Image (cartoon, rainbow, N blue to C red; front, side, top):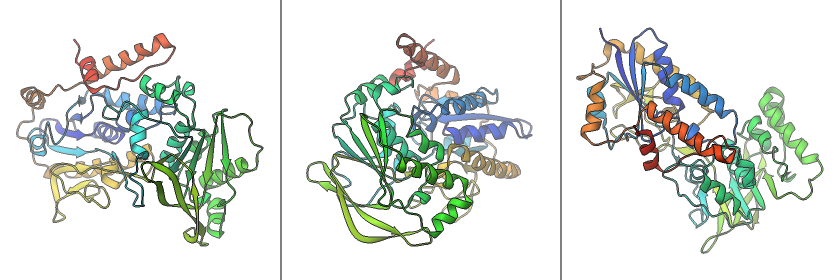
Length: 449
């Protein structure tokens, strides 16, 4: 091939950007278009991570350096499956990589889970992160709230629920989120984990961030705080588990704070059984579990009911099906072999690849998608001689199609305008930035002359 390899990456979150970065570092000349249905880049970083994580700024800076590479072009506000389809991308690109992530809450099949004021964590995360398609208002009218889960998302949700609104003024939360949190009546947040402290899925850093709020008291309930032989062994051999257990033990033994605005309760060995209520959430029923000696748990037949007015389930994310591609509804992934997308017969669809959570499921931290992307890109490069060449490889071809279809796409230059605008909104208030959340306003700012 005498021209650069033309690649479209659908999804401009970390997984897609990492894939683009690895491609540009290969010996193969490339031209890459990163397409995203949102007008702004960064995906999970912008819309899925709590705003009070300072380390996220470092990740954004790294992603920005990649996006500024001359081989990479950003095309936002382009919805795959609606504005463009697979046959379009195959016409204009030699290869297509899907990195669409996981955008839905995994269901929890217990009675009452669909009662009013019972939510999936993703719904709440999208609200406080200013996702354009999320509701602008969120009612926090209960005093007692339950959070189900033992991962980092559960900790994020619990921390934000317990936090005082003014503590988030130094972040980029939208004004509507700040106003919503000022009206919160929450006094107690209860986090329930099905297994023991040594089996928790959150990281030490996320756990410690719970304790960075003077007006919030962390209460580790001794009932359920057990370590069996397998737990002890894991704590001795795994520094992360050891740190988590030690942190929780220290919290359980320390003297309580006085005059705190909110209490954050950590309950272990409590499995969800039922969300109780008639017209709305009125309680949360759990079964007391016990460790079996090998790190697993079993039910004891003993039950407890907590009088809560809201429930947030953080039991995992789930990807949405991708138009024109096979989809494994149970795993929530596109069937693939090392990133090579497979058809219904298990054969590789030529020139079609996947990476990130849509490839392997929503597990692991953001950095883990780098290894994911490396595997996919290595397989793509190994397939160079087999790739179907684009019919219209000119870089203007896709632009012409978008304009013919009336798609108001955004660009990297448009993103820098939006970025500057958000920062200017924060300046009069002494804040670093205030995030714009209305999609049409984002497009208008990004496309301004």
